Image (cartoon, rainbow over the protein chains, first blue to last red):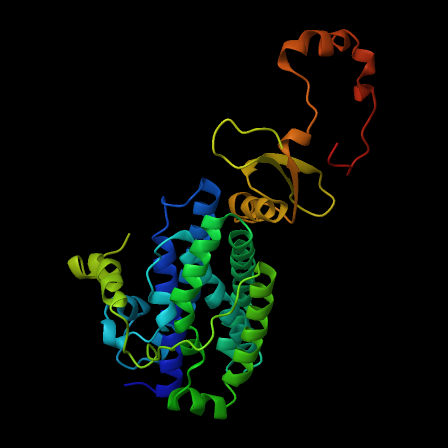
Length: 252
Length: 98
């Protein structure tokens, strides 16, 4: 199928994380709480799409069947998507979307920082560009976390709900398998335990700034990177891939 | 902050410096509830296409401005005094931003 199955698989995970996060964030377009935040969220969505494209192009270049990045984005079904479960969760309300962005951007900024030091030059180059965006997303999301936590009773209630809803999907971000471990052995990807530690340090700081407790003894969901997803991904893909299915190869 | 007549967040004026040494120019305005949000909103709206390297944000109600009804009294007296304009000087070659 391709020359380096493990690398290909990891690239799809990175590409899919960003594509699904970007598609979800784009759902806010024209629905933002204020014009400025609407634009901010669409900007963030476009950052995700750009990062996804970089990883998808790299994956397509390893594909010996001649698939393009468009084929990979619009031609794969739910079970062939390898994003983490967190990014496919519904937007629900603004607090849920911002908490999701906080968890994900804090993860991405640590992952990209480490990937910049990895042995694969193309991944390192993509990460060096993407880490600036991830740091900005984190800044945006962590500020909102604090505002919502210290705002009104209503904003705190919604924030707490968002944390309870999404925390069970956080352990999944640091899940490793044979694919990951073999790339770790090749020094292409970092030790996921150290990424998790840095992520937890960040979370302790953000939660303590907002005076919010980190959930304890929560059942954690696993999957995503093996193609098994929550029920939400299928619906998202239906909408995202509809045009491509109706008009294969359409361009504008 | 002045009272908003609607549910908009307070207004801020956005100033952008395009390149090192260039003057910092007014670009427009945005709404935000605090300084950090003001910076981020201005960044997202005004500098996503390489428009600048530096942003200044000023709460709109911190700006002291003339009112348009005073235009005549305020500015007309200078109208007939062309000798106040530094247009009689030669500007040395290579000097920009004047």
